[in-house]
Image (tube, rainbow, N blue to C red; front, top):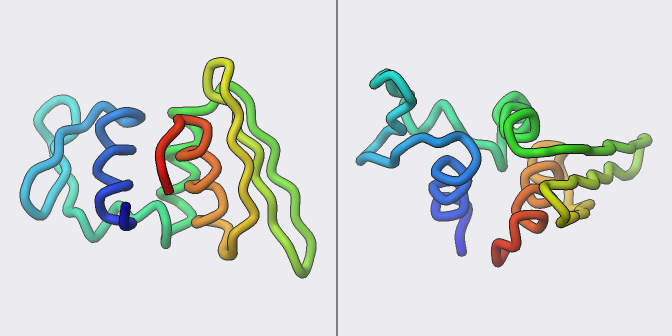
Length: 100
């Protein structure tokens, strides 16, 4: 799956939003443009997902590497794949059992 399809699935499962052309419909009928919520690219969006999804998480990093370990229910996801945003979001996907 590509980043857009994974984001759509995360928005449905984690945030409880609906997917519409060019935007995400939030609860309460407000909406956000798709370009403003890109958790694989934007650290703030990935942290928002993390807050909504994870029971527990651990973020570790130094100058060279960044690792995220996320627990959702009884499942764990771990990642260290590049940027902080991509690492956190990938760990969330893995904890949810999504194919990356």
